[in-house]
Image (cartoon, one colour):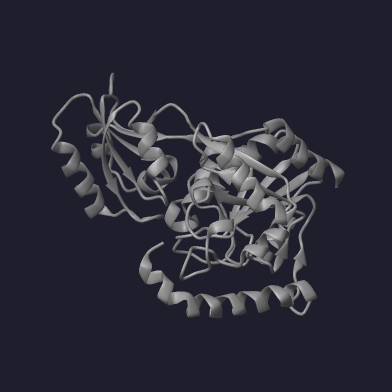
Length: 342
């Protein structure tokens, strides 16, 4: 922890009191919470920053889309609009946010994706178009207690599990660790490919007080997908990304390529000057086996900012990811047991 953050403990204590009172009011019914349609699953975390909510939402959509009309409801972080909007494949990230657009482009007509900063309004709008087999996935809604999903999945990254973190501004927690008691299961995300038994047991021991099923998961990377000029072979890559905690991605790419990195802030809204900077950096390589690689989330933000000439000239690729859960059958059974019991 940064030494300066220790001086912020009084502010963390004040933040703790505020969030404690808020949660107490919800628990006692002083502040009302809308019970959502069944089945409904909340995907969230206790901390700020990337914890793997997008891969988990994709995983659940794949798991359930054949048996249910999957509806994803998100705030649409970073969008320049407000209110309730149904996402289409022609939407832009400025209109609906990058993650909702990613879901829609990934699954197309197989699922419904909507955005609303007030989740209760979004849920009510979706009620108007749902069928008997509708299933609602709430993306990043663990702290949105004005709505109450039937099942909650709490995510926490392996490198900084919430049980060893602190409240803002000292640490990265949005609310106290005891908030984990509201979850139905806890998933440790972004784990290394192999975890020492001692490290795994340490995490499990720290989580035992919450009495929840615990699962470990890793990120699996797919094949590069071209959306610009194509390369017959790639040896060097310029990684362009605006995501939280890109370290795992960098490590993965370095297994195959020589990697140069150009990082932007999480959910960065790319503009023409950024595109110019990226292409100028790429031009310094002057090699035929060099490509520009970005994430799927950055791709949906970049695609409308690149001109047709730029796409014909520069070899742009994005790297899709999937979630791999240890004890996958047990996790899937837990989810299906809930959704089929309704």
